[in-house]
Image 1 (tube, rainbow, N blue to C red):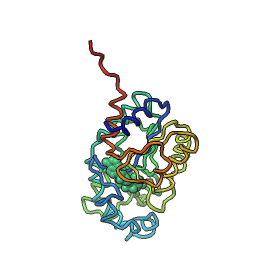
Image 2 (spheres, rainbow, N blue to C red):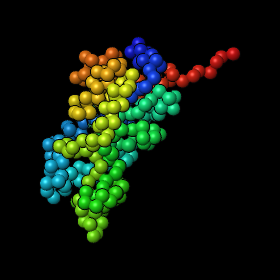
Image 3 (cartoon, rainbow, N blue to C red):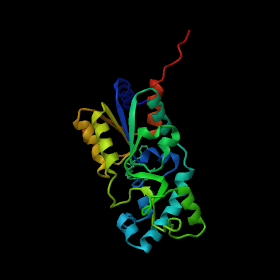
Length: 259
Ligand code: NAD
């Protein structure tokens, strides 16, 4: 185990209230590409096309959005939680984890076994959709069946016929106020704030580590590459999210006593 991973295990062991902040990097080892690494989503698509304004503004914008959504949803659907997601569930079972604040939309923290009320989703959840007129909820799975059957722009069942939108926060869309306030409150109340797999360039999510640090928490960042907040961290671990989290949690588990 590297000395940074050992130090992180010591941080975790001595903390009483840990908040973990995850980004796309915690799910790359589940087969979901992140946005900004080479080969990531934005190497293949132009983010300026997939804004809330374009989605709401025209049928052409919605058609284009769903063309992309039809290809990206199967990647999320077939992904399985990896040892990093499972390690966070163990941390919760050990009573060390207050909550996970996530930028991810893939539902993998919950699928790994974290209770939904322990996961604060800042950018929504791609496994659900909803009609913007009557608020009828739709499983994204059902919408995918329509897309696969040739529907270009999914609409709400008759007589409503309203626009169906995935429950993700699109570029240019307002952030969810309740989740944002709750995340900031929990970040400020933590004594260890652990960032895992985030480039920390998407705001306002990227303020969370700064809120925690300003309120007196220790800040640790586990990421493969540099982030703009590295200078404020008490500990930087350059390594894979799954490998580092599994190694840290392994150190916390009680060991059988040899006789
Ligand atoms: P990002 O793409 O900006 O950054 C991901 C970071 O994770 C990078 O700095 C990269 O070096 C690091 N990383 C990649 N694989 C890693 C690994 N195995 N271990 C450790 N670090 C690793 O992602 P972000 O910071 O989450 O922000 C971008 C937006 O991406 C968010 O709004 C989020 O909604 C969205 N997104 C989510 C998913 C998902 O739900 N899985 C996937 C792609 C993008």
